[in-house]
Image (cartoon, rainbow, N blue to C red; front, side, top):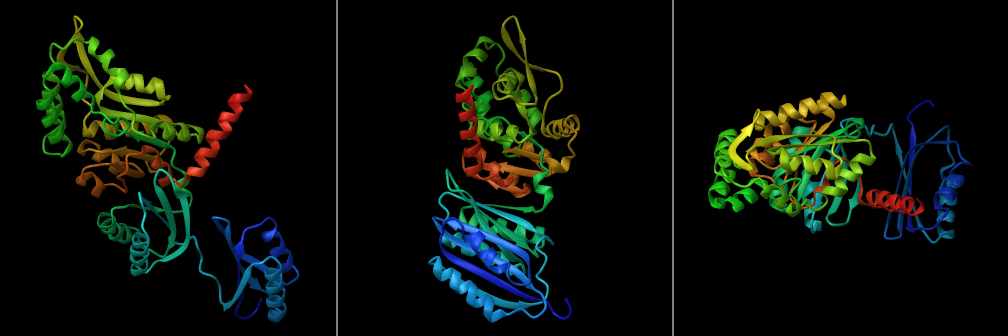
Length: 403
């Protein structure tokens, strides 16, 4: 083509029905045009179909308008044709995903987020829904934004609006995530295992105080752990078997791990807790990797000491790196999830660090923050929709019925 390129944006809106896309493109095929972009969205039976075209030579714009309008009227829809010139802006350049989680999610929150995106000189190319239960998750595809600046601006909005907002690079990077490593206590589990042990040993208040100080970063984790474990000296080891059935997985934990495994992810846990509990979780959930401390037991009782190196803040990062090496996955393709100060190093080292119902210091350091009590919403940060998860569950259920 010579001279400025003429572009046409054809938009159809109306009640969705079979054959709309086929009929529109059949009509357009009679003219000398090439397709530059297509977007189709259906919301509660209402279709919005947009086609961006480049027109060659001297297109008969009157005929195109007449034929598209006639087609729309025949289908009980509305048509709009917008004429422009020049090359469309490349969508991939500087593309980001802005993921918003809310329960509920109010229009005022979307307005504030869209305003922040515009104020940062960015454009919203697409908006889609990833989930409507148990939380609402909306995702914006954004171009032209500075990632660090937009992340900082939206972090401020997140606190003010009471929603979770994650800003991630777009493109293949997001789909390359292949290893997810999680903290255990108050992340994979609702419980703090050492507090359950302390309740049995009659020292719950002392241990809870030390746990809180360590998670807030006010007390060295390794020192706090030694002091807490020392308080358990003399506790009958049979208590471990009593506690195991009482452990409560965080809602959505099984769905998260099941879905990730279907997609070929490796999953692991790294814990400042104890192997006597993580070994059982690894077996039950089919985890690929696990690292934790080991309680020393002698003559059927806890000695108040541990065996081997302590898994602390640095130990968790080391475990993440080791798991990644074993899986053959670079750190840029890892996801780390945690809630406390001892998770900070692994959250910072991972390609995507997620703060799960975390302390403020952890939220401010993470790439994404989740404040709802469902662990499987992490799937949405990876671009996986609730409908896809449920469709896979239903398919697996149907296959199971056939076996």
